[in-house]
Length: 598
Ligand SMILES: Cc1cc2nc3c(=O)[nH]c(=O)nc-3n(C[C@H](O)[C@H](O)[C@H](O)COP(=O)(O)OP(=O)(O)OC[C@H]3O[C@@H](n4cnc5c(N)ncnc54)[C@H](O)[C@@H]3O)c2cc1C
Image (cartoon, rainbow, N blue to C red):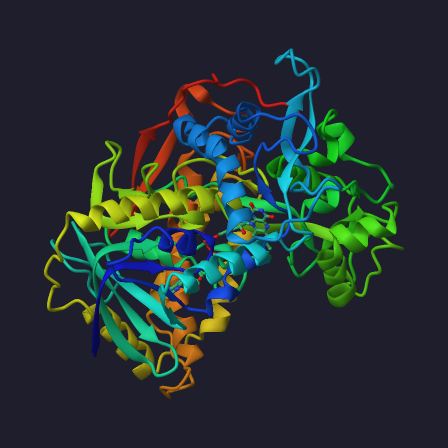
């Protein structure tokens, strides 16, 4: 076993982790670990843009951005955090420009901006109560915004001599006090985070990393679902680490389905396609969003558009594909060629490559795709992980980005607000760590730090069990899609609580074919499957207990939002039996909850 010591460890080389790393001052050591090469992190797949009320193309204000984010969240977002994010957005985007990020430009050379779902301004800027119309707020680099953002941050990290452990797969946190977790993955009671355990994927060697502070910036869990826009690495590892260490996860029932994934594949066709003028059509050729959101139409927030698509399909107005599954059409054929070539080259290329569809001549078949985790590891606005409704901090443990729940997205995230979240709260988390490590010494490392990882690896490598990783994962993904997808009900969710228990039992019987040590991806996928199952559990239980419909959580048996009983965050803790549920209040500062209409 190889041991390392760093002041700071950051798990994840996406935008959140890299932005945090840039805040660690000279004189302190910082390592970033990533299970893929840093620039292959999912941030690099982001297309549409990063939201900030720069007002470069139309009058805009951070307060309008704040209002849209609160309304988009279906009033579940914490308004203190949303205020911080939308105010800081302007500085954060200009800072990226100064770091070297190549944004698309307006003819005068300013950062170009475009429309995106749910981002609005009052039609009459002097009358805040006037009708709201779509506003150009998304700052973009063609449809490769995340790619250039990730590369810019990575180059700045190299300049600052941040150390990278590339293709290191983190398997566990090391908590210094309290009961350790046993190999059956039942919950423990850690107090202080003092490091982590990782597997060098190239050699299968186990490494123990000792640190003063650890940040989880591990991204999302899209791979829990059959159809997803997320990269293969989006297996929810960070959520599982926290959950398995007896710490809660917040608002996990809020899973964003993006309305326009490529049919059957889930690969994302960015909202930018609709921001630039694309429209959705049903099998009658109707622009059906006119019925669901009469003012903003195709630019309604994602939860609404995804439900509208599914409703059209359920009521017989979808297109039936060759394999019997259904889709609707995204039509960009009426857009000028230069808009497609200059602003949407990547995504129209996806339609050509993966479906053989020529988007300039025919509509693109699309269906909703699991896209984003609104919930996650609860943190303060400075990225400090908290463990209860009183916001008690877990010393040494931080989280940022999609893995974290600050909560700025509440029940539904607006497009462009995640790239914003990662740069604003990645930086704040990094600053908080920089302060913490100055006044903190290394806490002792427990002797059994790597025990659980070693025993899990032994079990999987030596197992002769009959369960196979691919088949079990597929079963989980199909069932989550079917029963914990866009529309939910008590019967399906109750069934899923037994399903997940049985999947976890069967997981103990998983065996793999590759018994070697070099790049054993079978082993890694087997461990990831454990994380997928652990992360699915709080999603299912969160969805079961929340008896209302809000944002992306839509209960057929409780179709209305219920502020009296449910204007609160859920916290779910792992136990030996059914998870424990607790609640945390929502911060409401400026905007009182109102009916959400567009
Ligand atoms: C196709 C697509 C398009 C999108 N477009 C937009 C957009 O236009 N605008 C917008 O605002 N948002 C967009 N989003 C959402 C946004 O890109 C993500 O939410 C955000 O980039 C997440 O950043 P992150 O830093 O939290 O994590 P990620 O970028 O996902 O990075 C996670 C990191 O964690 C590492 N990691 C995970 N588990 C482990 C482990 N066990 N051990 C070691 N390393 C680990 C990974 O290797 C990776 O480096 C899009 C998302 C997708 C999928």
